[in-house]
Length: 275
Image (cartoon, rainbow, N blue to C red):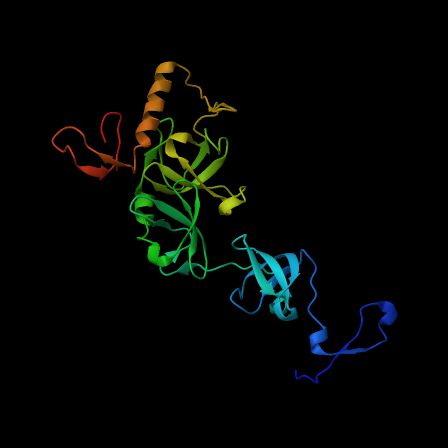
């Protein structure tokens, strides 16, 4: 459209429907309601979908829409001229730079994370501490999918558990929640619960904080966490000690006695008496 172009508009108001209004292009702008679901058709966010949470004036009389993206749950700002209403929800990418959705990847020499979404430039992950971290393909040190699938660890009752098993959390932030084991690294489990909306239902827990679902029906919890059916102080002391042993995993230590005195290393295995 040129400077002299005009656009003829028929009003939606029934009383004015018979009147045709002639306007210049610069006199009109797309209109959206707050809460409308839209798809981005142009620009760096092309293909994204989400819900309009705010409209504001931009530069050069452009109207800007603040959209809460479906994939990342983050706000993006796009020109109103670049969006259109849509009921579709963007599915995102399946892979990026050799990293696929659901992979367990090495993000440092001591930490791993599970990929929960794939973006254009990076992937969103849940680390072994439960934190959310965005990782670029070049930062990945390879995946640990095969090792995870082969790993077997013991739960709080010394029952072997592995990927695919359903477990119940008995203490901590997710006490009483259930989940399916998607990945295992050392003593950390990545679990999925479709009823949890955060992080696509993925959360982490220690193996010793879980029990295999269906194994026992008499598990009891309190507001302070798991008390269990084992009440005698001797068993509690053993369990606490094991927890402390597990906490040594992945830590850098320096030997202060013995033939290796002065050497430093990373703890990869811990028992009640040795690391």
